Image (cartoon, rainbow, N blue to C red; front, side, top):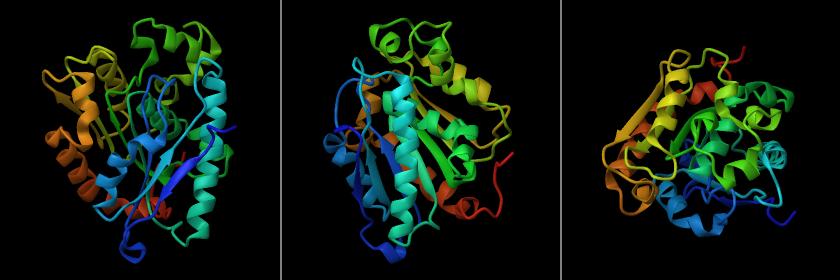
Length: 254
């Protein structure tokens, strides 16, 4: 499908690169393309990281089942590409904004599916998300959510909800940003996810952005210096130091 692809943005110095970031764009699972998010990639690449901007099929013509297929195909292809470029030993961090943060969390949290694909959960060395609907059950009803996941009592909805897959103790770093004035993804959604994650993961952190809206949070790469600097600090201090997780020296495999 024409929406099944990723943009590969190599690090400025492959020999000095310490991690890759797999980034999912937002757009309510319906709009946007990775080409429109080169500004975000530029910020990360300036730190010496490699960046992969992911695309995926969109509602209303596709639903969560199709997007899960895209996630599986994507992570397998990304791993293959890293192997081909001699960078498979580097940590791979996943992240995204809004709907993209949901997809990043779904990929990160569903450990059984990663194992089925032959990928250790510890291979994904960290997760970050901005204003993301991480607990679908805590979201208000909306046409995009219904088109994505169906009825709240359906199996599709259950599987598409990252909270469903919080089952195992996990020490991989997680950093969440959410504004208290977010009108698209209410702040309570982030709190609900975090309250379920924290007992399992001591390295999970929720940054509350007082008075900030969805759009303000989305501006992390250009206008929101507070969020940008905290993300870059986290990547440097938290994730880069656990490169050994991606190498399988320790981790979350259950």
